[in-house]
Length: 189
Image 1 (cartoon, helix red, strand yellow):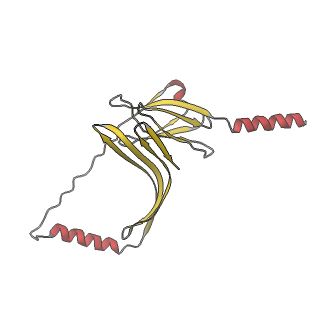
Image 2: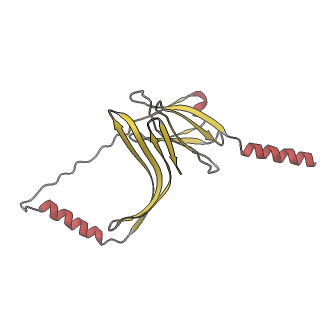
Image 3: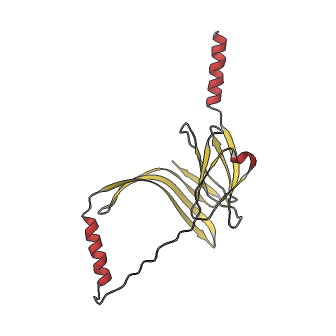
């Protein structure tokens, strides 16, 4: 009886710490070009998530806990895509669609008053300075620098912040992120 319990415990222990490694490529659906430095996050049912980024060729490798997990892939300028792990059993390439924004036109018309725009902005600022409400936010930030279309460095991070209309950012806490420079990856935790 003790042997059966021991075998069961060892099997459960081994199963709970097993991981699956997923390899793949991230490509632009419109141009069929690789997407370097895309952020890939594993979404696990047991809240044990892993993160990685794709290299210059769009290739990535990430560990997942279970085949029931899914991957969330994002990069600036493209729609975020969530796919199940089973997708990578038959496909090695994931295509992201470009994200286009349709912005409304804003028309500012100056009246006869010489300082109309300045006075308008001044009145708006005074109105919002009176508001004391503080907003909590959790966000993901990506900053990219490039030369001639070639990425040089990318900074990505998850952070929590508190801000108000009157005081701006009141509190800022970096939760984790990555700094990627061409030919060098530095990780910030």
